[in-house]
Length: 176
Image (cartoon, rainbow, N blue to C red; front, side, top):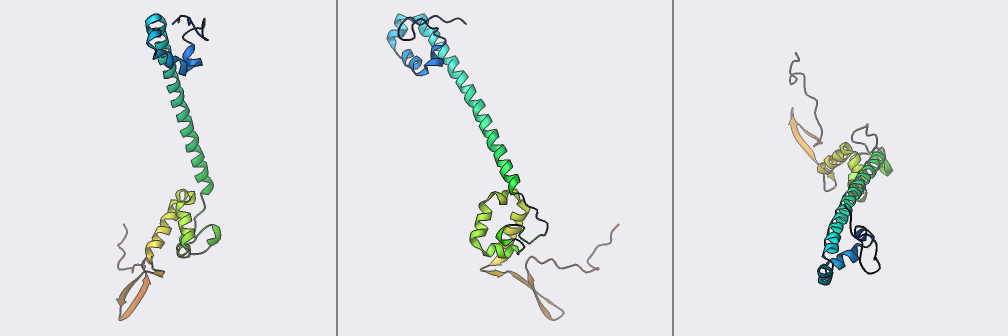
């Protein structure tokens, strides 16, 4: 589309199609002036079309920029999480940090460290460890390990609530 030239002002002689790209604020201001539309109706229409085109281009550029920014944030987050991934081979034992090699119950008892872990990327990067820590929290009641009791053959048996007793051969079902 060919646009007429600007008939006056500092943009005199330049294409109206370039005006919004060069000075969008001035183009918007000019479109609000009644005298401009009355004295220069063709130029006002051309400026309206050029301004709309410019705003569409800006919106498209903004959306592209936003998508690129979100992609960079996603990649940075993935890299951060990958850097926080630890080898959690021995269940129930903290695999890193100042509690390395200690039980998860010891980590939970150190409230500040536990709260730090819960809010850190390590928690997100290591869901199995985070779940085991949450289980340790559930087992600890006011600084004591929750226990289950059972009377078996006249003896009272105390064991941690998370303890899984081995099943006797009679309880095991025959395998096919």
